Amino acid sequence: MKILLNNSSLFESLRPFNDLGFVPTMGGIHKGHLSLINKSNKICKKTIVSIFINPKQFNNKKDLMTYPRNIQKDLNILKKNKKVDFVYLPKFKDIYKDKKKSKIRLLKKDKILCAKFRKGHFEGVLDVMNKLTRIVKPQKIFMGEKDFQQLYLVKKLLEQKYKTRVISCKTIRDKNKVALSSRNFLLKKSNLVIAGIIYKKLVNIKKNIKNQKHISNFLKIKKKELKNKFKIKIDYLELRNKKDLKTSKKINNSRLFIAYYLNNVRLIDNL
Ligand code: AMP
Image (tube, rainbow, N blue to C red):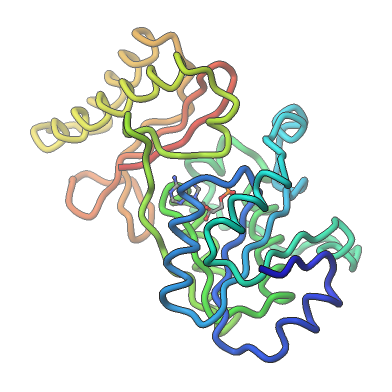
């Protein structure tokens, strides 16, 4: 596993390869990341993982400050996994060397779910993914369904701009069915137990949706119930079509999306 600390070492090392799988991360490596890496390793000849906490996608300073960082631990996990050929650890200037402001904007119809509640977040994500793709030039990029809206927006942008294909990967969960996330490192055990109970409630809500005449009313009531029962702030609880993320009135081809706060940590999930 070769560690690439800047762009010139990256360009030098990657030049010979034309079947490259790329797994972009912000570190805090967990089994969700490893599943993406394993898939890349199966499909592509070489796999590169990046670890870069992109300040431009944080709409909240405190969230950026407290985001889990432990490069040495991450590198140990990746090394042990034995499926990573390159780890790219860019500095801010490697990514943002041209100081021009990004022109990437969201369409009005995409300003939903997290885009509505985290202003500027996806503009930052799309900008960094655009830059990373230009630098790494991978044939395939592996991304998780856990961040479904991110996967949807990044795929839409990159596949029309580059030859790169964005491959979606299933959400990996812990034994309580909580979606793994680097932010879970910021939670207490008791929070994770509650997150597990909330997941089960969501499964039930989704099951019951098909008997409802007015889904949005039903979800409004369920949102209120969850909020009161667990004393949590919920940004959204919505059923949306998984192809275009439009609000959905039927369960087929749809996913239930939630974003909520536990112990001031924002968690998202979809099922
Ligand atoms: P992050 O480091 O949180 O930016 O995530 C890097 C990549 O890993 C993104 O494509 C995420 O969607 C993906 N990912 C994060 N958590 C999970 C999970 N529990 N299961 C599958 N993929 C995940």
